[in-house]
Image 1 (cartoon, rainbow, N blue to C red):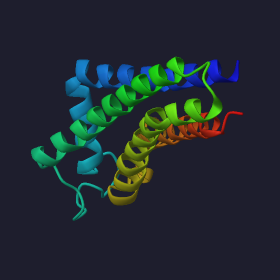
Image 2: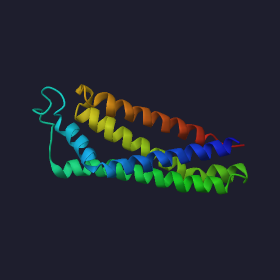
Image 3: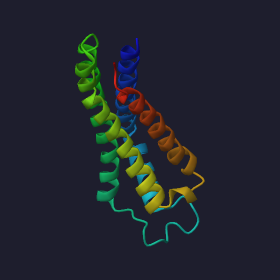
Length: 161
């Protein structure tokens, strides 16, 4: 039963990544707009005047693509990893534990994107924490997602007997 739950949790991370990327792509203007608003530091007083603020379209595009491609990569790794875990669900513990590798890698990619993109770059560099508009919307959501995916990764990584 625990193996099935681990597989379902990994597949839920797959869905998070694919649904998230789909939403970012289908609302491309919103995605670009959100990245630009954070990078321009225009959502709080004095931010847009900071030397850190940028409206460089190449950097804005790179940020949006980083988010989307990271979500897709995390999702695909979790889907393939979940498939491998499903195939090994009745195998010996060593085989099942080995089957988790790509799934855990997918969780790692998701956490990396959320931490680097939203916490390190968004809050650390572009001072997202100062923005009443995006602090809760982006920062707290990223922390919540990273925390939940991290818990999934920890649970899944526990060795099966």
